[in-house]
Every structure is written in structure tokens, then in C-alpha cells.
Length: 293
Image (cartoon, rainbow, N blue to C red; front, top):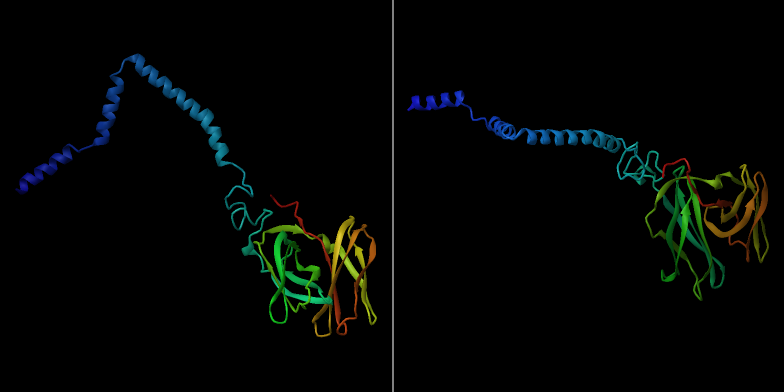
């Protein structure tokens, strides 16, 4: 029995079952079994195919594998930190940024039935901003009942506070005590320039009487270009740092190197002594032209 098994193994060694060799032999036998004209035609067509594969396919393959990376190719490349975000791209990866936040939102009585409100949005990221985003501002009375829900659109300036001012809010017979601010759409962060950074506010002064209050200041454009449509938001704080009043004014433009006085008024005296005053120039950020779109 053992001898028969050994003999079978010997036969396998002497005559291996090589199907690949047999297949090649069949193909070659089939080709060489054809007439010379048929073989010549096959060789000719094969040559034409190889020629076009090299002449046409070569450049196509070269082009395909050497397509320059862009910020809209759907691939994370060229130093991007997410797909088409970060690196040289205009769009930024939110994971690379410090978180923004609503520092506070407050409402202020102007006169019975009319209020102003302001929210301070803090963005610690230099050269990163949001060009447009929707928001909602809700006002509540002292019973936490909703008085008004206001919607609008704003932007977020880079590297500091963006005040969002809403004035002349009709509250009817109720008094607004609290304000709540929230964004109602995702924030789209981009590389931006901050045109407001070249506007300096100095010489802030206050005057009051029993029936009115006023804040004046000098706004100066320190850039070499004219700036148009500038908004300024003033917030008055008491000595403890509590906001007691807010207002907004605007200039149609500031010439390069020029300055103008700006004025903020209220129809009553401030409710507390003045400790400090914020006057923030508000200008929409501009997309960085050096970033790849």
C-alpha cells in the first residue's frame, strides 16, 4: 500500500499538473494554427492598440495623476487640516480655531414701551471671521415671559468683540428685563481681513442733564484708504462693570488719515454713575484675497 502511494507521488513529481502552461500552449497553438493573413491582422491590431495606448493614454494618465491640488477638489491635500479647509484655503477648519462665544446680551429701557438691546460676541481668532450668519434675539419680562423674538443677520469680526445692536424695540405695555441671543445657522469660518482695525476712537467724553445724556468721541481713519459706511456701537458701564446704556451711530465715510466726531444720545440721564465706555467701530470683515478659493 505504501509503495502505491509513493509511486503516485513520484508520478506527480515527474508530470506536474501545470494548467497555466497548458493554457498558454492552447492559445499559442490556436494563433499559430491560423492563417498567416489572420495572424498578421491580429499583430497589426495589437500594434495599433499599443500605439494609441501610449500616445493617447500616456498623456491622459500623466494629466490625471498630476492634476494640481485645489481648495474645491474634495480631497484633503496641500496642507489642509480638513477636506478643502485650512492650509492655503479661504475656508477654515473650525477644529483649528478657538471657540467663539456670546459674552452677554442685555436690554435697556429707552422710554416706556421702547427698548434697545445689544449682544457682545467674542472671537479670539485673529484673521478668522464669519461674513454672514443669522441670529435670534429674544426679550423677556421680569416673569420670564417672552415679549419679542427678533431675527436678523450679522457678521463676526476677527480678533475681538463684535457688538450686535438692535434699537427701537417696541415692547408695548411691558418692560423688557432680560435678553437672550443665539445664532440660528452654522458659523462658516473664513480667512478675513479686518478693516475696522484701522479706525481709532479717542477723546471720549460724556455730558448729562436731568433729561438727556450724550457721549462724544473722535474717530480717526489711520489707513491710507478711504473707508465708507462705518457703524459705531457705544456701551456705557457703571463702576462695577455693569452695562447701563447702549446706542449706535454711523458715518458715511472717513477719508484716509482723516477724523470726525461721533455722537451718541439718550433721552434721559444715565441710571448710574459712569465707570467706563466702549465705543467699537463695526465693519464687515473682508475675505482674504491671498487665500485660495
